[in-house]
Image (cartoon, rainbow, N blue to C red):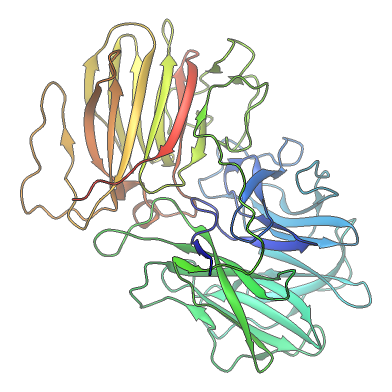
Length: 517
């Protein structure tokens, strides 16, 4: 018997939508303010997934203003395959609204966006037996309207459908024709700890829908399960006839209320059918794998030496990719970042990063700030919540931005020239070390009995030329979590420039073994 580990797509990968073509499976996830938009993942066994590109990967498809708030941008997509094409529909909040794109190959290229004039968020697509395309979406409940998908034209007025069992925020609807029934699957209760999934069915569209008598059919609310916030799922029938669901969840750690820094992740659960109803679960961190031939992909490299002509798909930036500011052709084997703002909290700040996918990890980069340059490595949740290790003019410093406060917590002189900067993320038990600043010499242990309770500790530092690691500060990871900062994203780890044109020789983000506490 084979097993797999959940989440199947770890790190910031919320609102998964899945479709199958033959023996291939594809998932699209939300990207919010990060571009390229709508990551696309490919699997042959529902367990191993590889990033193959993005549906919105060029400025003509996705344009966000520098002033767009964090967690705006691309909300929950739906990915479908119909009539020989892949279809992706999503809502760009603080941008173009609801848009629809198509492709023959999910790896791209994808078409220019077609606007669809519906309000609300979380649009879904389904085709009936007559070839009508239905768009279901969340706006004052769950509504549906027939559309012409190639033009985005609405073919009538939106009508009310079933809006759940009465919990707040009915959203993330997905409509399916399975056998003689139409099934409407949706999330309600909010995407926080009260998140739940409910289902209803109808013989014809647009209803009426009858709800499952025991809704919600999946929720971990008010439980001690290690996976929380479960919801926003999408059904798929595997090519062996079994049924599965991808859905989002979080893995909070630490003291109450629990904190998750990597964002909402993509999990996989089996689906059983009882009395004509799809019932998902149970969701386990280690579960029996689908009875499909295992198909692992080559491991994604932990290190990028920036020798390729273009950045790999894993690299993202807030709001826009700027080829004039992030250059691979300026200094061979380096990524040169030309600063657009003098702080990471400023509109237009230049940051290029990768999603944190391992709870315990080490991020390192080699930077040459040059004359008058300033930049470094950072763990970012949003403009107001990030930790930085910054190099500038023979100095290296640890910087913490927590809400309205920005503090240089340590600074040290270093020899001029290139410098290896480093951030270690280590999960902690309920009582981790407190903030310990080490500006000049050995640190002082945390006071005994001090209750901090964050999910992890971030150690900010640099490496000397002989390989010794100098720790500048140890910071509580709770301040880079959704429970503190709010929003819908997760941590992204990468490089930034706030003055001049720092050149980065390489960047490495690799998992690390957690030492017992």
